[in-house]
Image 1 (cartoon, rainbow over the protein chains, first blue to last red):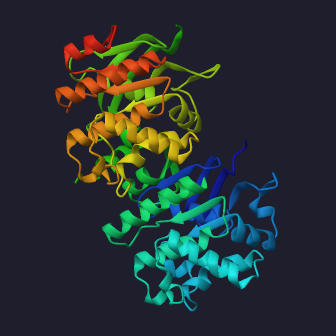
Image 2 (image 1 turned 135 degrees about the vertical axis):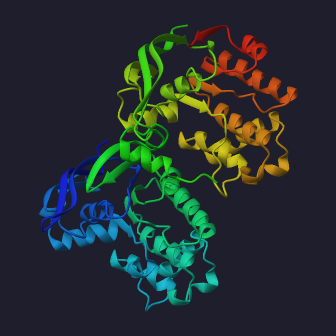
Image 3 (image 1 turned 180 degrees about the vertical axis):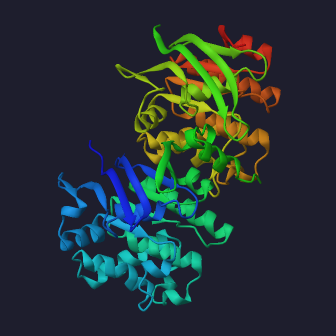
Length: 256
Length: 226
């Protein structure tokens, strides 16, 4: 077995300002990696570099394709990269409106991803879309409704269905529970956790919430000022943090 | 039986940056071995690192120096230097750990909490659930609770779910942190029976027992700390 995604000294600079610097790691199939840190620490910038949304200033991101090749993101054509994003990858945005097409129905949001990978049979598209809505706990009679009529939690679940319908191997998530009520968060987290396990997905989850990281991830990276200051198993980082900043971060969590 | 766990020159301390850089030493140069089919108690005064030793073996705490070698199939893995994915693999297949408190995940029913480690290892869901229910029954968890999240269970019920989870998957090495602490006599006996059975099946057991009687009943010797 080989890693699914390898980052080699990935850096992103905006003029003189550092987005992220010299980030290296390997993600294996089925692993969930959480990237934590305060706002401005560079975690979203890193996620955008890793997922090919913005080009890195230096360093390489390599991905192992289904046919066993290792491809560098910056050496792929735009068309190849788009195909990868539509098939092998998913991206769950913090704001579901960035990840959904708000102008079409919920069912069409899921069906569209299937059509993008070549499915043309209306009956199958409809059946699969219905099945996926059920799996994310959206009732069948809402399939033809616009996402505008959905609550925040439902939109987020719809976004997840849209991403997972093509059976990706790697899903990027940017604060997937940010901005949701706590009760809605718990349901969403449980759903994501179950799907990731059952589908043996690899995921990279950016979050500032250590409880979210604990629940979803097996590994964790802590970022500060654009750099990774500590990484390891999630329980290691949370129970035996080594770096001064990580100790501060962990000890700052309020207990309930 | 041969050793399946070898601890050599293990040292652990905590450097607390947020508390004026206080350095708290837990232990230095600890050596120990545990054989397959053997139950060993970790003993010592409070605060001398009994739970810490279990967490070091599980890889939750990082050692300052020394090695913790664990037999995994025909190979040996040093938990201290192993890559995260190798530790995850050990936790799936080799080392089980019954913590003092159950980490409850919202909405996951008790029987799934127990079945999960078996399913992670590829055992079919219905087979895993059958064994999970058998263990819950042995530990006197009422059938009407099996489908509920342990969120609202009492401390003793949560602890028994935790124990069932730990014993479900037949780990070659089993770490137990005060497994009987919040239980009544009947359930304590059930847990001690499970320990003896696991031992009989060849598991190496490393346990912290608060109660001396139970410790003497379950374990044949001790690793003394402090």
